[in-house]
Figure 1 (cartoon, rainbow, N blue to C red):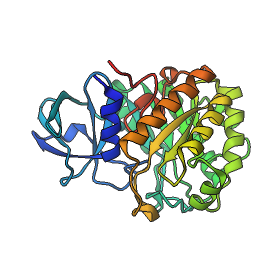
Figure 2: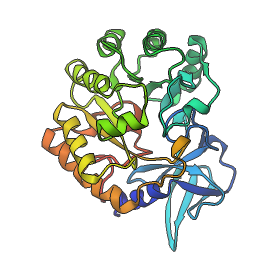
Figure 3: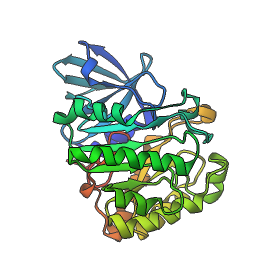
Figure 4: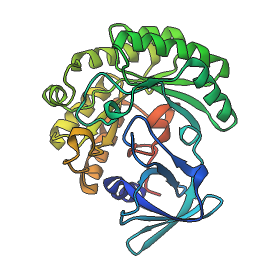
Length: 324
């Protein structure tokens, strides 16, 4: 099966109708990331890989739940048999938790600022992880910014300290300040994801007013020294207006410093609701460039333990998404 080709088409659509038997245990809702504020999503797996699709009753794609997780994905005349994966917290096999919902920043592509600001207590987060302890292999934390970057970092580090009792790898993705990386490392975090988001400094300034592109790159360089190659990641959103050449250059630059890029198809939301998701053909072109950049740098996403590179639901990931 050309799984990357199929997954590219599914990611380009981004949605599916869900029919058949009730699918409560298989539905996920998000307060961060591509599906923040949406009506939920499901993770469909057919053995070759996993894809996350937002539930939309008007989507041309359909997933029929046959019961007990067994499912059929209908794409045109094609029917692909697979399963709906049970969701632990946000995604399969992980407790992926948004510490702070809402954000003081206003990145144009993001729905999080529109969500009522709130912060989970350490006790709430511990209880959430405890409730799914038997069906997870990792804990991942992400967060908006309730007050400022430094205060958010301090709070997340206290949460990490409370979660270390579970003896699971912990990944953290927050906006970094000065020396965020060494502080997270000292706290016992296993992996980090600091997001460059846009392929060029100009696009970043346009999309993320008030935030520093250089601060992200500085944090990534620091992180590779501490956490090691294959354990530092960075989202690169595809569809903000960058060219393939600009996206490829950004990927190569990330790989050159030991960072695994996460190519995230734009979810048209926030102030970019009028934008389009990148087409499947473009996702496949960039997937090939991504694979080449990783190979040239000697990086392997299969070593990831937490967060998006371990999940793969929202992105094409070389090494994990293969033709079979």
